[in-house]
Length: 198
Length: 432
Ligand SMILES: Cc1cc2nc3c(=O)[nH]c(=O)nc-3n(C[C@H](O)[C@H](O)[C@H](O)COP(=O)(O)OP(=O)(O)OC[C@H]3O[C@@H](n4cnc5c(N)ncnc54)[C@H](O)[C@@H]3O)c2cc1C
Image (tube, rainbow over all chains, first blue to last red):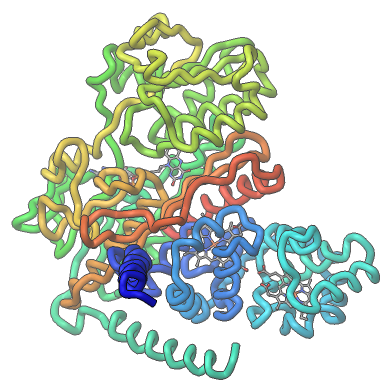
């Protein structure tokens, strides 16, 4: 390789390093707590949303949290607004916020649900979902379902079923099986069951 | 999570916890009780009071507010469509009291930055170590001839502070004949809630579509462009025939003569730059400036209060912090989300300083949702950091922005439901 080429390469590397550094270098670095406080206007103080549809994120498993934020940032997950917000943060900042929210207590609010649907949903859950969504879907390494806002769960299930969100491994089979057993309102019974946990 | 990740997580959580312990260390142990006096119990004031107590419960926080309860301006356009009542926007201060905030109903008339005291109309003085001022906006009445406080209260409401005028405007729209004409005079920049006048036109149209389908709504605007214009245009086109001869909404910008110069309240006629406009209902949203106390306390430079962007401390007087609509916080807009976000930055800075620490680096978020019509919600969102070179609040590159154009009906519908959730959560984050 001749000298000129090496020079060009060096200069180009230098420029690229500079460009990569630019946003980080001029922007000050806030703490995980400071970053997390900014989410409360939508997700509630410390992540306990008071609804009626905005999801609670308090107590969320940190790995599920980081995966969710990355999926939003990379436009891999259907969203109304989180894709625009997630693009503002680095992986490190996702982790810092994950730790903050994982250590917050989730305060659940009462929601209106149908007792009969919820009863049927409980049975379906035990049979098809409990294996991954343990303890009735309480916060765990497959996210939070218990006590989550019901309209949000409806949106997410719609997204899975309509191919707008990637299915977690092996979940589709179980959801299909639940629908086969219970009919078209299977999903609705499950959501009423999760909503009944207050 | 792999084991390594989990170990790292536990390690960092415990160091975060340790850090929390030092941060949460009551400043009481370092000396006398620290006192913070908060002026104004709106979005900025209530949020800062709650978060100060949350971050350090040894701080004595007194909040002084003129009114017995808070009536939110955000979502008040839904009163105009009949979707909501004013009562549904009104909240008391008991939640803040439960956080240990002393809430006093009075009006602050002066702040002495040397003696560090706040003086009220009720004749009381309050000493402070730090004072936070979040009084919202005032109006530049002198800019529109023939318009003043009394005319606004009785015949031509501004309804830009939610309250009796919001209800008056609603009644006028209900009483207007079918085929009637509503005129909204929008303000010049900067003003409280940039998408607000256009959301207002939309909400009025939403009502008229069902109850007075031949009504017309004209927006007279001294600007050539406005917030979320593309999305409003899309929504108005889909819902209200915008762009056709039968459009319910008409927008006249500066170039078309939209700047309003005077009002004749007897004939309900507005004098605009090129021609006069006569209406059945007129809503003037006047040009704005910081609330009166900001002027009385010498916190302004021009119309607004200059602040340090790291802390929101006033650039004019030490130990006084100015939040929300009254502050100059470009590039953040004057919104409830912005005031809420700024309040947390100020609370953390005050707590750090009481403990003899340097304030940390700030981060901010803003969002404004607008409901353009039934099942048609849109939003704008931004995340900001402090640009330490220019000392300005700067959007993080390649993030934020408005809802996508021509999104599916399902997405537009979800945004309505999230708009209402945002309202509940931000109120809760301020007051509960
Ligand atoms: C129609 C409309 C729609 C809006 N929609 C949205 C929206 O969708 N999203 C959004 O984010 N924002 C919205 N906003 C903007 C939002 O309401 C304001 O930006 C926000 O309230 C600013 O908070 P603040 O603390 O600066 O002032 P405010 O919330 O106005 O609070 C100021 C408080 O201080 C009190 N006060 C003033 N002076 C004194 C004194 N001397 N002594 C004691 N008390 C005093 C006042 O009584 C008041 O309670 C909207 C505004 C309007 C008008």
